[in-house]
Length: 598
Image (cartoon, rainbow, N blue to C red):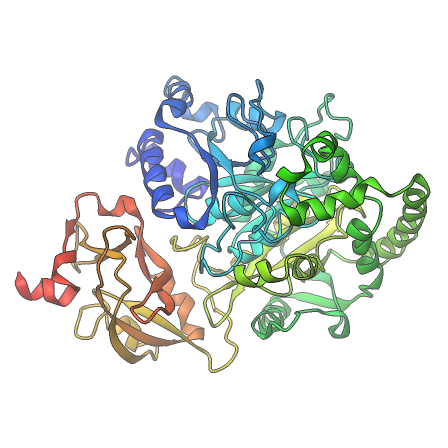
């Protein structure tokens, strides 16, 4: 089902959905997607009850986020629920929620629970957690990105409408890129940090993950606000025009990184995605102006190679001194460096940072924003385990400078690779240009429309995915799109060709969904009691993939389907709520066998 704010509230008004029914669906979906390791703590039905009762006694029109579910990174407090920052030994139960969480709940939003993260928000990859690595929503062999791994996954997997992350070095943007989301890294101090465990207190921001720019703006409107309890909080004093959100029209002049300064670290698919994104934007009225990325990159290096790592040490100083062995070894290695830097090193770095800030801001003059890839390469979980520090540093090439230079950014999806993996770009602007950037992101989402999250119906319209080497994507079908079935024409008219008839891995249940015609199948993952299901693999031109996905109605979507030979491909999946009223036909071994028995 559509989980964006507009769709949810429309369903509530029409009476086809209630918050209570939605939470039942969320709990079922959370269980079905557990292998992605999104959650550290998911609220129980009893813990949801006070929030549901409050909504049931309040008119929907009184609250802008009435009934909207959201997830909270587990370094941000939710009253009565443990905050662990990914370290069980550090756990405590706060009496009060973080200021931003309180504001969201007061506006009608429903907290779902606490999400997984790189321990103590130290990392951009999502693998540094005792709760298991965050596994990408599109392919669990790949990283989710971090440190806000679970927060991104909760939205991408259709469990939450929005989520809160934090962003010091890119943790609110890299996971957005890897999971096909909008990631807003607000201006420092625009959202209160009260009730957030800091990584680098002078640099941290609470960030927002959503499916689209509209939702990011709606959440920002509730979440922002000056807070006297937060010494780094500050009001939005930017010009009124930058406080206005809408659809940015007309020509735009944006800065881009010149080719010799781009880094894709061997990821040809992402390099091709970037090039095709620029072509699409150029055709839509974006004037691309090359800038010198060197001062931005030099500023970025100060974050981990300079004295700011001492802030990470201060955040958990007592734990590092008394029980360092409970800290993840990679995280401990990074944070331990923060004990040594002297004040002289800090001032020396600050002097250089101010020089770099001047060089960077001078280049922003006359530009509507800076535009970069959000990340240069998408790694597998295995790669990050083998090379946890070096590869992590590559993930921050386009993100680490942002808070040091007091800039704001919006990560926005812009393409899919031929393998069906998301790619995204970041819009970067001066402090308090948050809504100006969101307005540009809104325009990009409509000029390069993509499916929202993973397997949800399209928010705007079909996408043109990116191809790299032959321009085709394998798609697994299991029902109405099979040879001789009523929707097979949707593949053939797009130039798709049949590759093989095979079976899934023995981990699925097959259902005939209610409704029709045409009759539709529901393939649902069940690793404990599943079976092998007969399927077909079709090769679809990459340029047609987005329009094919756009025509898939809820509760169906496209995800990753495991095949009998151990490989995976893009394939039809069904949200767990979709099998309500459905007929299970797993025992027939496939769709055509069931049809023949009727």
